[in-house]
Length: 256
Ligand code: SF4
Image (cartoon, rainbow, N blue to C red; front, top):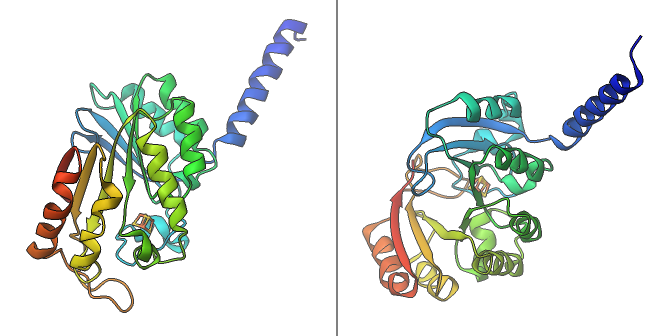
C-alpha cells in the first residue's frame, strides 16, 4: 500500500500530465532539425505548425494550410528530445507555419523551449497581435519576423481573405515597440504585386529596424486567376528604391 506522501506525489504528477496534455495542443506539421540561415546568428531547429487563418493565393505551404493535406502531427516530445540530444550547438528554435499564433498551445510550447535555454524566433502573418503581445510580454520571443504582404488598402488581395488593415497596423506597432529584435518582410510575387503597390510599402515600413524583401520562387501559375512568377528586376528595384533608405537595414532574400 502506498504511503500518503507517495500518493500525493503521484497525484501531483498525474495532474501535471493532464495539464500538459490540456495545454499542449500544438500541431506540428514538419521540422527542420538544423539551420544556420533561419535565425540570424543562431544555430536553430525550425518547427512548422499546421493550420493558417489566411489563404494567400501564392502560398506554397499547401500541406500546412489545407487540413485535407495534413500529415499526422509530430509530438512535441520529439522536438524537446531533439533540443536535448539533437544537432550539437543548437541554441534556438524558429517557430513558423502555417500560422503559429492560431495554435492554442503555443504559449505552453514556447515556455517549454525557454526552459531549455533556447532563443526563440517567431514568424507570423500578424493576424493576432493581441496573442503576439502576450507572448512578448511574457518574454517568450526573442525575434519576430512579421509579414507585411502588401499595402494596407489592398491587403485582402494578398491574404486571400478579408483582413482588417487596422489589425496589421496594430501588429506592426506591437513589434516595433516590443524591444526585441525584428524584421518586417514582404515576399514579392510576379503577377501579384504591382510596382505601385511595392512603392506604397515605403510609408508602412518607414523607420523599421530591418525590412526583408523575399523573392517568390514557388511554382509558376499557382492560385486561381493568377499566374505567379518570381518578381521582375523592375519590381525588386522599385522596392529597393522606395524602401531602402526608409529602413535601418534592407535585405534581399530568395525563398524556395
Ligand atoms: S499566411 Fe503564410 S502560411 Fe498562411 S496562407 Fe499566407 S503564406 Fe501561407
